[in-house]
Length: 432
Image (cartoon, rainbow, N blue to C red):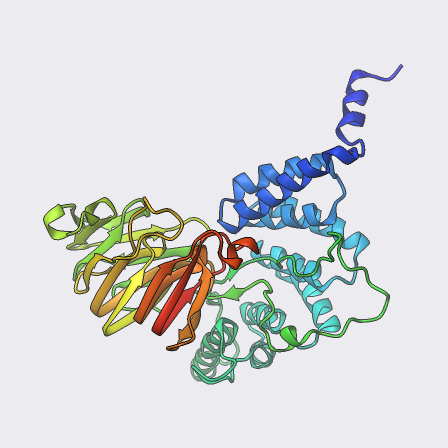
């Protein structure tokens, strides 16, 4: 006679009947949405429900492993990724994810093997070169590190065509190597500099490697040809990017934190202060924050440092030099008090009852919250830009924003609430 426990196991892993397919897709898509918003614990619960209905679905398992990675549960993420690799041994995304998981755990020797396999299949994989360069840097293999950094784009000029976060990280790491080797050569010729390499923020491979059926692309035994996007380093691979350089009172830290010096005065969005040192003075006076913005902002000054963090996002710094920038309130971390601030006339495109965009003007530094470096879309007269409202981080110039009606084609294509910008200026956008 079958035990009760055995019966429960059988029921838990039975093939889901056809009528469960809609429920499966509901949990899967909810999980993707929550993961995109940075709510990884909620995403995990949704993916677990989808997994209960389709225990061996590759798309569910890949999404779940990525979510576990973001939650810091590297052991489970590694096990799940290795299970997927058992069926898809030549999957570049899975190999890269495994290398990143091991790199994040500090298992440098183990991380090298899958990352080197990535280069065997895709020799121009810039982020794999960058990560291998950081591994070489940590063990003091300077020449090897510099070679990988060059292949990752370290020799691209700042602001040149093709320059991106990978190239900037590689340049910064290469500069660290030059400083370290110069120190070793001039002071201790036979001793390696053991200073840690720049901390990196890593994200696993996204889902562009899946077929329409939701299964991982199977290998035919031949090495796949790298895509044009991969050769240009612009495929949405996992980013191994160091924090941005300090600007004004703002100093980005590993893990998505932002250190803010209060000495000259800053304005900070409420709800994102996670730590402090010293004795900063807080000012919540409505008279100092017109247009009712005291509900959103609080002032800080004096001898102290604040630590800010926004779940699922990292700081991105921008300097204003006598210009204006309208920022979505949920994308603002902080700005220097020298900047004037007022409520913009534009309602929040996603919710008309939400706070308006904040218009900053003058000269000073601004810290924004993004999932990765935002794209800049230039808008010219006579050529308006329509874009999903959820993607808009900020805009500047002489632009007139407009909330599009639900009947707009973008809404029908799944973009949700959308905005249209006309005039001359630019829009900063982030996919999450």
